[in-house]
Image (tube, rainbow, N blue to C red; front, side, top):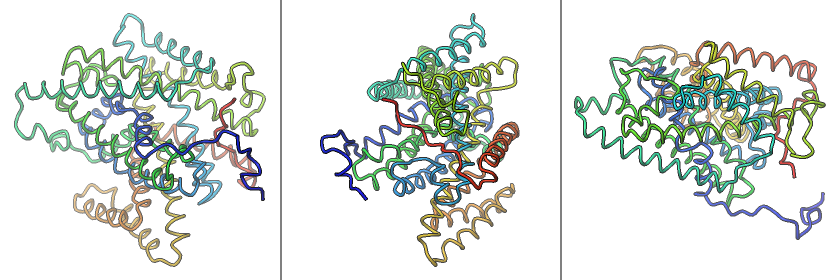
Length: 491
């Protein structure tokens, strides 16, 4: 077998391991964005009956366990960084395919909900233009710019993150001034965002937590920097976990201040863009500043998501999983999969226009996206459990004991009795000590289970179609499965 020195010229450019732990954390925060919970704040408040802080913190716990599993799997597969790769290699290729198919749904839905949010916010700024007009505008702009092959550099992303951080800091100062300058009803005023006995409903809070996961989507991207990180086996794991923690605490502080400014008992003028009205209450100029900041953030996310989906479809077309003559073609001039950009743009715009007739909403799109994301997160947690606790554990009694506790917890958790819930929580704590990946799997499972019935119907149909497609493609999952790996950047 040839060594690296015999196959790669000594003068050839190589990746340098220059990224420190803090560089990786900064990258993760930039990818997720410091304003992550603001776009979905109104939906979380409405669905969780005002307990937005609680939903963000519960979601953080689930994501911390999942981040730990991602970090450990990145050690085993330092150049892959894909949930479907972990599941396919460690558990079963067919389950890896199912995980990959769930990720396709995420990629397709992300640009759709970004068009919805941008159009809703633009309608607030310029109500003279109807929502559908703004949807056509943003859908066309996303598609046009992506066809041009425009890319945002890391330096621009850093500047944008710094600007967002400055806006967040100004919001905190304005919120503190407003809160302490106005009367409130004592200590209960400050604890109500965490727990309000008058409105608390466990099922509603869990349903909202299922949507709150959206605030953390993107942390797994840190694993793609393994080849450029110093001491990747240590730092990738730490950076993934710490990024989730930093984003979780920052998000909790943001929504806590927002809930103090705008109590849950007061309806929002627009649920999808609620945070801009909250910011405007703290300080009037912040209505426009925060609204514009979130518009830019969602604009960037929508563009990135569309080209990401297009490249994913290109990978499937190139491997002949989809018609190669359409999906597997790259524009010779721009070096982008032009057909796929148009295809994803049309799907995203079509879904966004359904808002006009009441068949779609930002909240439903977020739930559908999380339907696929939570499947991937469950898969990664289970893959980590199989690799590090079953295969490497040998004859250790921990795996069977942890699985037994997991089954008992799954049976107990659906109840509404506080005593039984306390027992289930204790079992989850035991599982977390024994095998953190199983705790992550359990929490993600219940968040997935508590998505709305609409998300379950659409997501279920998508997964059934994927399983049927995979079964036909591989003759009952006996042949080669679809290669979901993203292709390398074109030169």
